[in-house]
Amino acid sequence: MTSPKSLTKTRWVIDANRVVVYPSRITYLLGILVALVFVGIMVTYLTSAQGGTSVSITFFIFLVVIPLLFLGYGNTYVEFDGSRGTMQRKFFGIIPGKTVSMNDLHGINVVTQNGGYNYRMFLKRDRYGRGVIVSSGYRKNTDANAQAFVDQVVPVIHGYLDQYGSVVGSAPQPITSYKYYNNTGGSYTIKSKKIAIVIFSLIFFAVGIYAWVAHWAEDVSPTQKILVVVICLGLGLMVLQAAFVKIVFDTGSQTIIKTGPLGLGNKSISFSDFAGFQTIRKSTNMVYTGTEVHMYYRFPNSEKQGTILLHAFKSSGEIERFLEETRSIMKI
Image 1 (cartoon, rainbow, N blue to C red):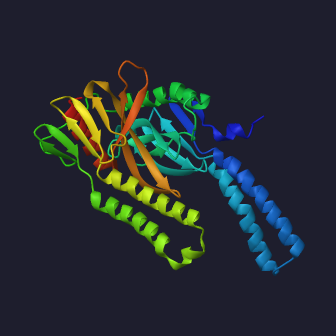
Image 2 (cartoon, rainbow, N blue to C red):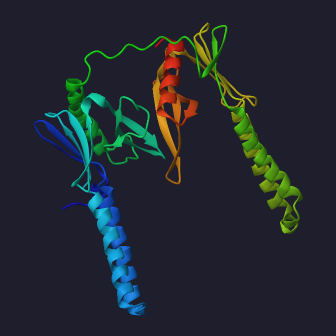
Image 3 (cartoon, rainbow, N blue to C red):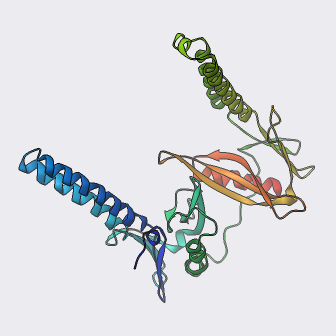
């Protein structure tokens, strides 16, 4: 018997030359919840007996169709055909999407977003874009379904990519000029756009000052007024601090140095402690707002790792160029 929890997990089928993954099964659960809510709406509508026959029919069709769409979307799958060398999504399990040649696929990577993560297939021409979702969302790194997906599914699909992809990748072009770094005698400082951040901090300062002098605040207790002012000024200072944070890659000392005007979060990291990059997609109210590039590093004489935010971008091309420049500086 299928449990509600199992509907939030990825399902897959592996045949001789074919892998099919079902990443959207959580919509089964959403469809059931929506159906229950709509049943309550139907009962309320029938007891009130409002509207004519045509209105009632339209209303009932709407209440039936929406849950069915949720339930149907749970059948959406992504098919990797090893015999034809193609990837294709089938929406609702029957409507074919665009067929993509495996020659054009880069590989499956984890995408961290909104406190969770999932796995997506990326194209070679858009390695840091949105990607095609090939797994359900997960919250814990120890999720058994996620580990099974990585162990059982990903190697098979990547085997198809090795079979149809280029045997020898194109050699990276040497970096002769830097778009995202200022070079001063072997010290490479990440460029930052300060104007927008400074304006944002000034808004917090203005709100804090206005809360102190505004007439409407006269009826508020002094403690509440001071609390509002302190919070606004504190947020303004934090944002202003972020505007003037400097991250320098010093090739002479082989260190990455992060400094800020208030001394908060200052770091000095050796190139030899580098442990990899990670991109984290950010969204607000389901709207994509950008992708952060983080760098992981090892703590000396420890198995623990730390992370440092390097930059944020909107496009995949910008991320690729930034990482190319960073690897060129660090010679990795």
